[in-house]
Length: 483
Image (cartoon, rainbow, N blue to C red; front, side):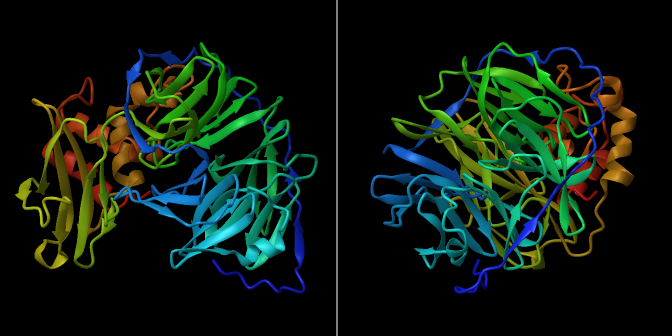
């Protein structure tokens, strides 16, 4: 990102966010959350050297500050790159306009041609410090510094000052409020949502006292906040509650592409998945810092950097799930857990596919040799005797009209799933239920849903889905989960 900011003159535009009327009182709280048994996780050491701070870039890239300067770790090869610059404590890393922007105690920098270069924005905000960075719609950039909250938009810096609300040292997370996109802000003694209102923003504060030490939105669209040892949740249907849990929540991390919420507590590390809270069994020493897009937690401690996974994810690089294949591409598969790994096989639409490179697990996909419509690339990793992990990548080729949530998938939910998984029937996460009545929830759990319907475990109290109905769900995924 190279904004055109004059060196001699810089115009600051002050953006006042009006305070909204008091929020509507939340409905009566449901029953307590579901507590499950301890969960064994797979731990991977990413760096043996002690780091002072770290940040993720949103694309599985890891950046950390240690003796010798700034380092990054390649998500595919694991290679460590040194940039030889001392940035001090890292505030955040974000990909914007094709570049990687990094915030540290030394200011704002971009990585250009493999080198660290001071960003032109740094001259405009020399006192920003290690700011939290968050990209927004239309290549906006939000910067939460130690003394103020700033917005970079269209080459100008906007000072965001919600009337009567704090903004210094903010924690930020993109989510929604009443169906509208919103930037959630935790600062001082307040938690509020900034909702676009023309060229400005309107602030919607939540009731009660807050002291936010962690803020994140998960793949279901649920906002989570660690505040004063409590865990606050704000669900997409508007329900909000401070949960009664058998521990004090000190910090948390989640990712909008994953359903996993990880919690730093006075009882160790916990995880929340599919409506259930579980303690993590024997995690490595370290504090929780971030969660990547496939739901893995990243810990930082005296013994280096560790990454924890609740399962054994298989990752695809080179083609996004739900995308259209318009030209020949190379897809590389990565088994993220190597302990007891015995090999990898690949299928395309149920037929075996020969790997183009068996050592790096590479396959070639060419739309010229594929029929129009939806396709599934499936990877099967062997782990010991009769243990397997499977993952699928769905995509489309040529003329293809994908199903939509409103016309095709939601009616299935209402007919076959709503009795157990609808919030209106009491299936709230806060109450120990497992609500699935949103497009975001289906997208987040699509692997589990397809596995359940293919193997006849769902829907309950109804006939198993036939091949056409299963294909409908698969086609919806291949088409990119259209609303």
